[in-house]
Structure formats: C-alpha cells, structure tokens
Length: 298
Length: 280
Image 1 (cartoon, each protein chain N blue to C red):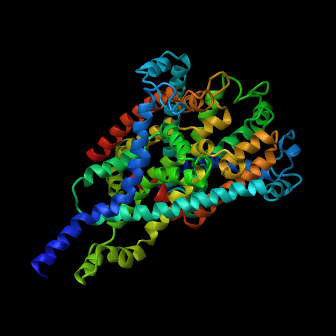
Image 2 (cartoon, each protein chain N blue to C red; image 1 turned 45 degrees about the vertical axis):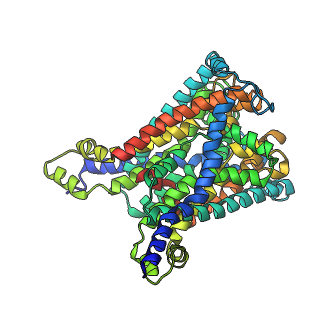
Image 3 (tube, rainbow over the protein chains, first blue to last red; image 1 turned 60 degrees about the vertical axis):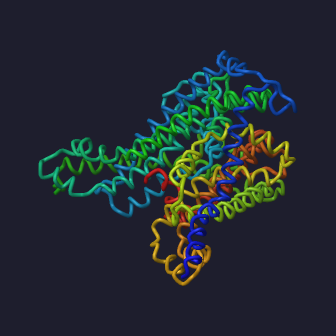
C-alpha cells in the first residue's frame, strides 16, 4: 500500500463509525433529546401547543402543580404502588427462583414449572388489567370464593371502592411483574460456583446459613440493578391503572402518569401537564444516574 | 452431601412441592380463568358458583371477534406497525452496533451512556411534545406517527442488545475481509450479518413485543377506529359492549397469541431479549 492510500484508508476508518451510528443518533437526537427540550420549554409557557405564540409563564405551572393536593396524592400513590411492587416482585421472584433451583425437584417438573411461572410476564398490561377486572368483579370468582370461605361477609368492589382500589391495582401489578426477578435470579443462582456450597457443607453450615452467607451476597448485584430498573419502570406505569380504575374512585389510585395524562388530554392544560411531566422526568433521571453509577462501579 | 430419606428431609421435600403447587396456582390461575371464560357464554361467566370448566363450551366469543372487520383491523394494525418497527429497528440498530463493536472513536463511552440512560425516559414525558409534533406535521392518526414514536423506544435497547451480540463474535472474521481489500461495509454484510442471526432474532423478538404491547402512544396519537391497535381495541370493547366479558377474554387470548407462540417456539431468544440488559 502506498502512503497516500494508507492515509486515505485511515481517514475512512475514522469516519466510518460515525456513519454507522448516524441513523440512530439522528433518531435519538430528533425524537428523544429534542422533545425533552421541547417539553421543558412548554412547561414555562402559557397555553403551550394550543396557541401559536405562547407567552412566557415563568414558574407559574410548577407552582400550580405543587399547590395541587391531587399532585401530592398522586406522588404518594406512585410511591406506595412502586415500593410495594418492587419489594414483592423481589420477594416472590426470589422464593420462586430458590424453589425452582432446589435439587429436591425432578428436572422435568422444574422445566415445566419454570415455563408456567413466567406466564404472567407474557401478557400485555391492558390484558392483565382486563383479566383482573374480571377476577375482581363484584360478582366475580374472587368474591364468590372468599365469601364461601367466610373471609369476607359481603361482595367487595375491589376496584371501585376507595379503601381497596390502590391495594387491588398494586396486587395486579405484583402478579404481573415478579417474573423479571425470577428469571434474572435463576440465571444468577446457576452462576454461583458449587464449591462455595461444598465448602460450607464441610463446615457443617445449615441451609439458612448458606442462604444468608452465600446465596444472597452472591445475588446482590442482580438484586440491586433489577430493583432500580423495576423501580424506574413501575413508577411510569400507565395502562394497568388507566384500564382498571382510571385513577379513581375520587383520585384514590391517581398516580403521576395518570395525573399528567388527564391534565394534558382531559383538561387540555398542556403547559401544566408539561410541568408535571418534567417532574417525572427529573425523578427518573435521578434514579437512572444511580443505576448507571452502580453499573459502572461493578 | 445431603442425607436423604430421613423423615425430616422427606417432610421438607413434601413442603416444597406444596409450595410449588401454591406458586403455580398464583401464577397460572388468572390466565386459566381468562382462557376458560373465553369459551363460556356471557351468562355462564357470572354463574354462581363459578364454573371452573366451561359447562357449555362455546366458540361464540371467538366467532364474534373474528367475524367483525373492525376488530380484524385492530389486529392488522398491530401486526403491521409492530412488523414495520421491527424491520427498521433491527436495521438501524445493527449499523449502530457494528459501529460500537468494531471501531474505537471519540465519544464512544459517553454515547454508550447516553443510550443506556435513554431507556429509562418516562413515556409520559415524551408524549406531550410528540403530540405537539405529530399534530403540527399533520401526521396525527397515521401509521407514520406510531412507527416513528415506537422507534424511539425500541432503538436504545436494540442497539445495546446487538452490540452485546456482535462483541461475542471474533474480530478476525471481518479483519480477514479488510486484508482482502474489502471495506467495513462489505465485511458487515458478507461476514457479520450471516453469523449474527441469533442476535438479530433476539432483537426482533424484543422489538416486536414492545410494539405489540404499547398502549399510551397508540391511545393518544390515533383517533379513528380504523387506526387503533389491539390494546386500544380491547379497551374500546370494554366501553362499547357493556361488558361482553367473553368477547373481551377471547380478544385478550387472540391478542396474547403472538407472545405465547414466540415464547414457546423461541424461549431462548425471548429470555435473552428480555433480560440481557439487566443481568449483565
């Protein structure tokens, strides 16, 4: 190769990666980063989107949101819904993973159960919502069984009474989301070296000691990263709540996403909705930074 | 080694199997109930006491769904949008992943972090500016609006997934092409793509499922019944037919079929797609 040819080749090598990345960067830039800037802009305008020449509003919309008791209620419901979901996803996922990993069960049974335990994960949020509405109908199967067992005295309107609605949607979400933990922990369990347990057996360790001193510490990285991701994603849940309760009754299941959606597309207050959307974005970004830091530290 | 057949040991094994059965009931009963209700008549669904197996097995709910062109259109829309987004995502992500995997360049680390962090951007935050954009470009209530918005959500993870896969392929392969005087472009199509099929399948499965399940944007960016996708169709059914539960369940079963089939046929790719980002 002549020198000229070689430098031409090197130039191509230097430009090539940017060319390969350009379609992706174009899409992410134009359809993700730019809209994020836009929504921040909207939150400082009066009548954003609706008027061609919106006026500057300052922090008015943020003040309006922070003065709205429904916003604080939504924040609290989001927190309750998310924390309960993550804790139970993790617990159920862990218990199922440990049970499936036990050498006390026959391998064929294990494989069948593994497939069946993952099932809830395969269903779309809308379908999960519809299934739970059917199950928890006042005349539905859950009430009928609970009444026969004498646990409840009369029909409970799970999704339409303010006392139970939030717990009911949280329960449905717990059911729908544990398999992510289960699958990840099961993969993690299979990665723990067997000699750890053999060494513990020689020292005469009991089963629960092996769990606390070997299994859980070994799984910790998975537990932490999945919990963070699950927290971020659960916080943003929309369709499950929208279809089961729509945020009601009387705001009792209103979460940040339904609150924002209603502001934007029921009240057409897109400016205030943008302010609320920016608040959600900031919370997510904070958690994402935590997640990235954790991933890099590993 | 574990001592077997002591009474205590057998008790533990029995207890474990009881717990496994309880777990199975928890996981599978709601799905079983959906399936069995879809084969019942609407009156039988609320019969007291509830019937575990359909007493009068009927396909009337499925006939009602499959005989209605409006509902078939929901399915067509879902397949079409998910299919189009999957093809575009895989192509674009493959190029980006090739850039990430085979080249060193300035800004690589920060671009990678950017892509990881875009995965967690709340959809509701992007919804409002998208609505503004879609209306002002006159593409409200079109396939284009849905395809473009879905791309944004499928692309970041697809890039990570594909990059992870390409990193597992030895570099000697494409370097051999370079030695023969071929460009990196030739290497990509002649060498990399044919051996990347598992990665491409996993990425496609993930992308397809994400699109198939999407609700918020389909709800907001489309309006006419002929543009609605399956998730929205199910919601509409709930409002229109004053609780035809058997039809709703039949539509849910039909709407879950693609996922169930992909899961059963390509379990390995499915799980690879769903967990790769979180386990690594």
